[in-house]
Length: 471
Ligand code: PLP
Image (cartoon, rainbow, N blue to C red):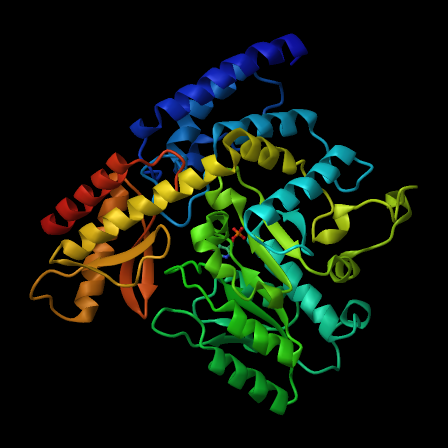
């Protein structure tokens, strides 16, 4: 494809992209395909000769698009949002076109320097104190792994990096029974072992019980193990649990435990002054991650990871090779040493576009609108006799179940709600996530898609009531 052809296809592509977004409500939210259906339509081997873009695009529309779940659909209420926005997409087009691999300052100084600057904008926007330095990771899981590895190195005097994890006391990581699985996964990878992850009990608000955390730490010390890392949740995945950072942090300090905060979803709400209380106790934390790629209108992937001691992070990851040496070493940031992957895309660009395009006030307005929609829905669910909320609303996250009068056993209610959820998602009209709250089946609604308006939430609630009563 020469550049004239590229220009013409690119113009057509932008038209397709705009039409897609304008007409997205015509698609079922969740793909309605069966396992293997898309694979069956894709050629079993690569073509020997090149094909025209028109044919590729036609096949995409016919064979691939039906197998896509439409995350940018305004009736997407599943998981957490991965909301994108037009300025973010424009920046992604630039990033893809420039195609820079930004592993080091030298391989694209603008990418490095913009990343440092824009992450500091974000730090200020969420009210995180000075002294934290930011880096973009591919995912919250990547940032949590980085925290667990840094904690491991600090706990072993940076010896695990040298000698491996042989001989010393077992390292232990702490989180709550609500914490996202990324902590357990990270602990497996980082050599703690799944058995050394303590899932501490939570209270009625689903927040970790600090006294239980301390008891667990003491028991591990008494058994000769080494408490190394604790992960607090600001908005855990299931019901949005928010841990008390001050109480956890005080315990972590006393026992020399590295303290990380997983604010993957709810961290975006810290740009709202009325939710800053979630960060109380921030003076005790060592690192925090939140994902602008969830709820800050920035395309996947973009996880903002803030660390108090970048030297410890760099010492954990840095590796020397003559081909990565540069005359600027020591005067500049080389982000290749701040996480697992060497190669990095120019991800700061989309944040720069999004924040400048909406301004802090524009972004705040988006989040407040989503939270207000969730508040309205919460009131409607609470007012309905045969539905009940199974956990308090957190920001724009709700969990409820259908419980008609004279319901039989809990097990039957679980089965009824599972049938309800599967019927709803199969309708293609809206998309929700199943959940278990204190072991009872619940339907989870997360409001946060860029284009979700009151009419979409109202339609979803009508759909839920109609479907439930017809079961
Ligand atoms: N932490 C929380 C609270 C989450 O909800 C999620 C995913 O939804 C993650 C971590 C993992 O996020 P990522 O996909 O960026 O690794």
